Amino acid sequence: MANSKYLLGLIFIILVVWLTMILCLIIVYYLLPPMELSSTVYVNELIGAVLKLLLAGFVMLVWFYCWNLLVRLYFQRNLSQSTVKQKGQRTRKKKGNTRVSQTYTKSIP
Amino acid sequence: MPISGLPITETLLPVLLISALVFAATLILMPYLIKKLKRSGMVGIDYHKIARPKIPEMGGIGIVASLAIGGILAIILFPETSMGMLSAILMMGTAALVGLVDDLRQLGPKIKPVLTAAACWPILLLQTYVPRPVLPFIGGTRLTIIYPIMVPIGTAMAANAVNMLDVLNGAMPSTCIPVAVALLVCSIILGSTEGLILSAILASTLLAYYKFNKYPSKVFTGDVGSLAVGANIAAIAVIGRLEIITVVAMIPFIMNSFHSLASIGRLFERRQVRTRPTFLQKDERIAANSDSRSPLTLTRIIVAKVPLREYEIVRALFVLSAFSSLLAVLTTVFLLG
Image (cartoon, rainbow over all chains, first blue to last red):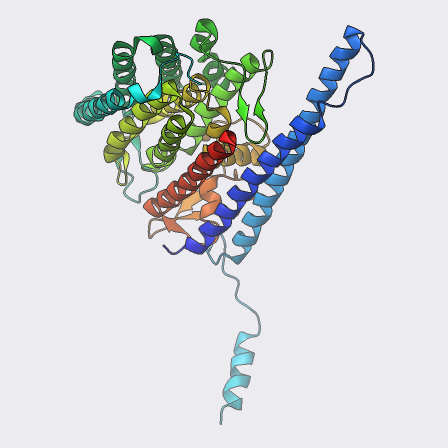
């Protein structure tokens, strides 16, 4: 397949997403529960639970943001390397082409 | 592990029988359905071909019928799993109904996810879920309050993710078959009877359907089929207790939906997008649109560097789906650890 190397890039992205997803799960599960407000009052326990949920949500948002950034950078890099003429694009004629070719012709022995 | 308590070893041969019957039923049903759809004028234009042929739409009705037949056979052969199978059939049926309405009347981009989320009502009503998902390296968790809230969100995400990737000939079955097979393998490893039965039915239905949807398509799936398949995958995840495995297997789908929505910045319907993500060249290769307003779909990412023919893109999607399904099986190994 012509794009088999390109596919490797996307496979690598999926692998990174999978590994970071498991890492985030471990962070959320092991880091957050030990955090507790030192009180036996129910309201404080509720506030603690809500804070844990917000922190877990924050970790997830950071993960989504990094994933989005990685894919966007990858896409932009590949698009810039593409030689496909877009619809409506005019091919620009470079000025001074004939002058360069005349110089080149003169230099040939 | 299974909700029904039925050991998995007793189910393998009967599941094989149900799979074979469902496979045959799909092969027999589809040609009649295609003829019927053509006669009724239910056709769509294949925009990825220069000739723009008219192809019968809503072939997903055949998928829904086959899945329902498989579910009913499972209820007859495994009465212990009847609650789980019934929830899956009703959930898939509800999502199919939403898809049918969308195919005929075009639902808005905000109402469709809400209605597909509501498709999970059988699971919540019949209580065929266990709010204790198992996570890799962590083990069992207890999410008694959050789990019932996550079920409708997960259903909407799965159904719409499959729907959003159904853009090319054979794309939906090519990407969903590896997911179904991975869920089948993981169900056997983890001893999930409901997961095994449902994923076997889904895999055999899609394998038979692929014959009619592959390039060049004889029939399009339509929202009726893609939403039903997505809801079925969500049902397998919840009823089969394969939540995190399903998320891993569906990474390409999540990638497609997430990056499309993030690039547009809001919920949108495919038909509303003015700047298409790709365009068709004269040689029938599909190339990426460089306009920054175009949604960042997975197809657009695949063809960003080199334009490809439709079947080559679908092959690439299959490879990506197969890889993430392999990671899902690997995740299962971590779950056992």
